[in-house]
Length: 176
Image (tube, rainbow, N blue to C red):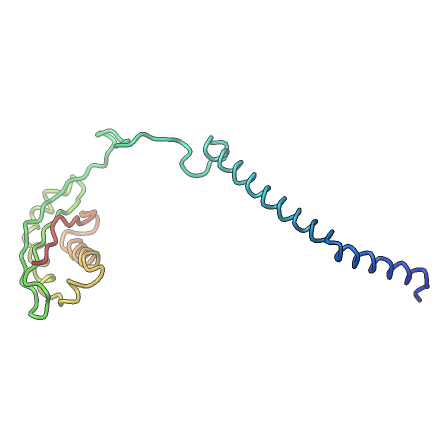
């Protein structure tokens, strides 16, 4: 059972909090908390930046490097490039352009350069066949070069073998 002096105390506390709210004291304390939290956020961000930039916190690239190649010639990967002769393909009748001029290079490990050069006529044949089979949307659409490069590289790998080609660089892709 609640005694009368406890009820009086609760009523007095409630009345005091109502008076504080009416006087604006509660609003001042909430503004102080907001200002304090913003200040602490800026302080934490500043300390984090200083820690990362000086290397105390090992995140990201704290070390500054000079522009240009960082590897010497001896440390670079042992690769070679096999040039693909220029291919000129007639586009379908519904295309905006009449011809596609394509050339590129195949990146290969240096030890397989002669093998890939030996298979170059087969590579050209499959590239010609693939490029001629494309529709106008395939060639002129958004991201066409990216998709065509992926499909051509997959076909090159099927001809030369897995691990003998690292990539296909398109040096010329001209629609005219």
